[in-house]
Length: 156
Image 1 (tube, helix red, strand yellow):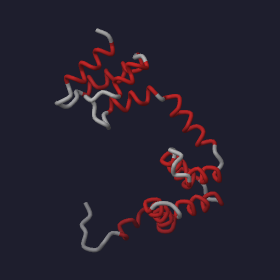
Image 2: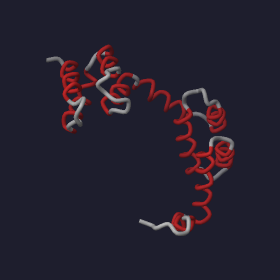
Image 3: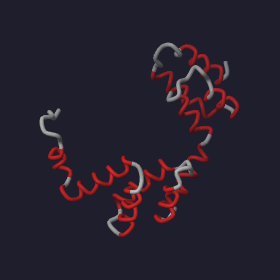
């Protein structure tokens, strides 16, 4: 039995039941050995849900060079260029850029930090709230996070 046939047999076997962790890991380890056509077939299989780990692994194997290249390019961008690309919501890189900008915000105490905060404040509500929480942490520290809890709520 070929690797591809083995993986598809496992997909059929576990389609209606939960996957056994051992079999799932084994199939994920086999994926890099498949041809591109077989990988596409596994990725498009109806037997796997949209967020299934095997499907995600197949995607990463298919587009590994593009994923790594895009992340490297984003890391190397200057902050101003990063902000301009962040503003272009159709670039397809907004989530990666947001992650990089958050890392730079935490690491930098200088002028770039204020640029990133300005860009986040002009963005969606969750970005605005993230900047507010970072400023709050900076002013009051992490230990006072319970201070902002609504009255009457229990802490677990």
